[in-house]
Structures are given as C-alpha cells and as structure tokens.
Length: 436
Image (cartoon, rainbow, N blue to C red; front, side, top):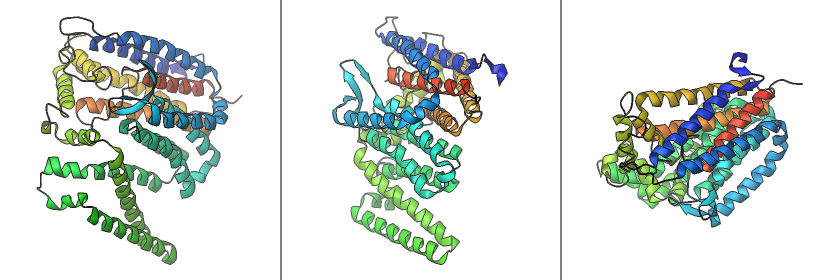
C-alpha cells in the first residue's frame, strides 16, 4: 500500500478522481457543440467552477479529523432532513421532480448531500452499537436512518436518488456484521417492490393479455383478500415459530412477511411514482414499445455507444450528441457521448479509473484505525459503485433509466461536490489510519 502513496497521502485515489473530473469537463464541452461546430452551451464553464469549489470542499474535509464528524453527524442529519422536507414542499421542479433549492439558475440538490450525511450518521450508529446490529430491532432502527431520507426523496418524486440509499445501507451493515438473512430481506423487498409496482403496466404493455391472471394485480378486491391472507399467514407462522420452535415455521414466516411488505410497499410506491417513471422500467424491457417517446433515450444511447467502435469517432466528432439526438446528454447520458467519441478504449479507461477508486476506497476502509472509519469508507464506496453501475448500464441499455448521474463526469454541481467530498473523506481516513 505504501507504494501507492507518498508522504501518507493516497495519490492514486486523488489522481483517478481528478482525471475523471477533467474528462467530465471535456465531454460536457463536447455535448454543447452542434453538428455545425457552434458552441451553444456554456455548461462546461459552470462545471469548471463547480470542480474548483469542489476541490476546496474536498481540502476542507481532508483537514478536519473525521472523528470530529461523528459527534456532529446527528446535527448534520437533522439539518439534511429539514432541507429535504423544505425541498419537497417548496423546491423547484426540474424534469418532473421537485428536488432543487435555489434562486433562478443557481441551486443545489439537497438529496445529493444527504447521501454523505446519512453515511456519516449511520456509521456513527453502527460503531456505537457494535455487534448489536445482529439484533433485529437495532438492524431495523439502522434501516430507519436511511428510510427517512429515502421516503422524503420519493415524495419529490426522485426514485433514482432514493434507490442509492439501499446499497449504502446494505454495504455498511454487511461490513458491521449484520445477519445475512436481514440484509437479504431488505434487498429482496426492494427488488420485489419495484417488480410488483410495475406489474400492471407490464401486463398492459408487454404481455397484452397473454397471461390473463396478471389482470388480478389491478383488482382492488383481490388485493384486499391477498394482503389479508398474507397477514394471516405471517401471524400464524410467527406463532408457530415462537410457540413450537419449528424451523419450517420460521421460513414460512420469513417469506410470507417478505411478500406482505413487498406488496404493501408496491401499493404505496404506485401512489407516489409518476406514470413516466413506471414507463421507464417498462421501456427498459422493450424500447420499441414507444420508440419516438419513452424508448427514444435508450435507443439513441445504445446507438451512440455501439457506433463508437473500438477507437471511437474522435473527440468532438460524435453524431448522436452533436445532432442533439440524445436528451439530457450532458447529465444522464454523458457516458454515451464518451463511448461514441472515444470508443471501447475510452470506455475501458473510465472503468479502469473507477476500479482504481473502488479498490483504493475498500483498501482504505479495511486498513482504517477504527470501525467508524471502516463504515463510512465502505458506505462511500457502495454509493459510488451503485452510481457507476446504474448510470453506465443505463447508457448501454442493460439498466432502466433512473436519472442517476455518473459521478465526476455528469454535469451538475451537487453531484460533483458530493463525489469530491466523498473522496475527501476517504483521503481523510487514509491520512489518519495510524493510532497516535
């Protein structure tokens, strides 16, 4: 590990982050040029400003001993929850979500910063209870820490950003030693909620009446009896588990409760999510259902990625972006522009730089001097990993469109600041890895 550092500073981690930021500015610049070579957007200038201020924030985070943040985390968490409430009530609506606070063109996205703050507070909670995370009540209390900001973000509604909190929680509790069955329950429930909430649209658009019994998912009378049956099964199996101490009762209780939570969660999600958000998940399965509408983004993004070939068309030589075929091309689909202009080689470079960040981040977490640093370090790595997998997968057509930005590369100050603050925390932990 010492070969990768100099004077106790991880230059590999810092270098990979800075190089990704520079590449991001380059392709935000490229996204603002038309097919005739006219520069119609100055987003790259704003991104440079945000990068400069983000580096200042990163430096400040590095200088503050991370152990001091543990005591402040509860106050920061409370403040972030207050901001999320204000945003849900009075925020500015952008792309269908009320997720911004600010004045005119200047604003911030509190849900981005809430990720880092939630990591700090959850890390403080986990380090405080130690092995107590294996107990179900304390595990659920920890989940409540991430569930509160998740719920407020879903009210905006911003499903993509809300989903990021799930891997953060799962990674941090896994590192804290939580029971795998508890972790699996949360992961499976989250997956099933997404599946169940899209079943009506799936039956309508994809199956088109081929499987008739799926029509029951929109029948309220059937759902009432179904939920009642699940509730009864859950209660009876719980009685069998604790009363007769039979293992098979435990598994019946486990899976009936999983289905009950997932079904109720899906019904609640259906009330919050907008039609276009549900349609994004359906279009992911078959973009040809609406090639000129909801499927346009995926089709054009896949076209851009595929047309880049091995070496790419050359910087500023892309067609999909310069002819404005890609919506939100400087934010959600920045990787599509890069893949078209730098090809497979450019894509591998981006993967490699993020891999460096992941490996160095986990190495820093594992060699941290205390559990608190281990938890916040792993939470940051989990957050970055989820952003990378979902955004790049979205650009390649193997993930549904969720609106999650690609850290360091996508246009946006809040996203870039969050990423640089996260790197600053990792560097902070590494510099103080030895006990004095």
